[in-house]
Length: 226
Image 1 (cartoon, rainbow, N blue to C red):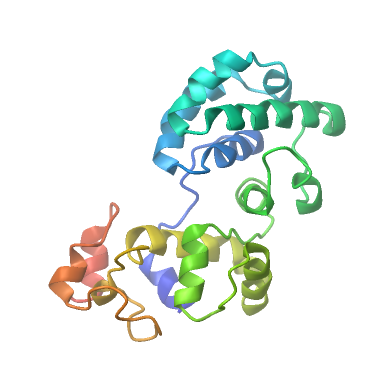
Image 2: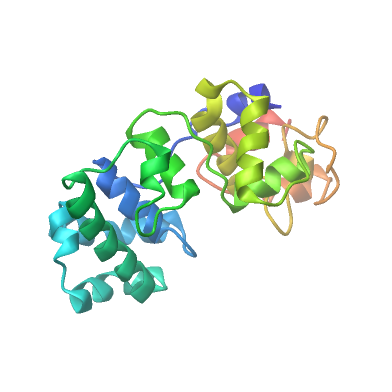
């Protein structure tokens, strides 16, 4: 199934825009309860104003809240970013640490965010269990576990460590483009012959093709003969 996902989503990557590890950490914190598209519309203004941990630590709360408001939960996110900056300055000389154990001690950073940063900014393999990842591994029958930490460890045992980061991207891409939460495009899915949950969504090809999303809809449709 992973080999097929690799062929299905050759463009899989982190869809948050960033140029530094700190920017990726901030963008991932902001992505909670909103879309990567919305975050990417917000971060240019944020990143232009706040470039270092010191900038976040000393930020004016009202100004930052105004910038973050479109992402939702902006007060909590402002608290996290200011707290993150302060913790980095106080404990890590203003630099983002490179281990999971240290990253998860920082405000706003749980295991999911830490693994995103490790895998995409530092090249350290990590499994990102977001809502798409969790939904798909359960639909695929790879695990029935609901707890994200347990899912991370169970799936990690199934695949070589070197594949963890890209596996996460491919599953997330498949979740966003094909295997949707409410109505998956089962009839237009390259995994249909292998998936134990086939039939959760429409199986008729013309109907399923209309459910495909993203910039490669035509290619995804062609892969299943549409």
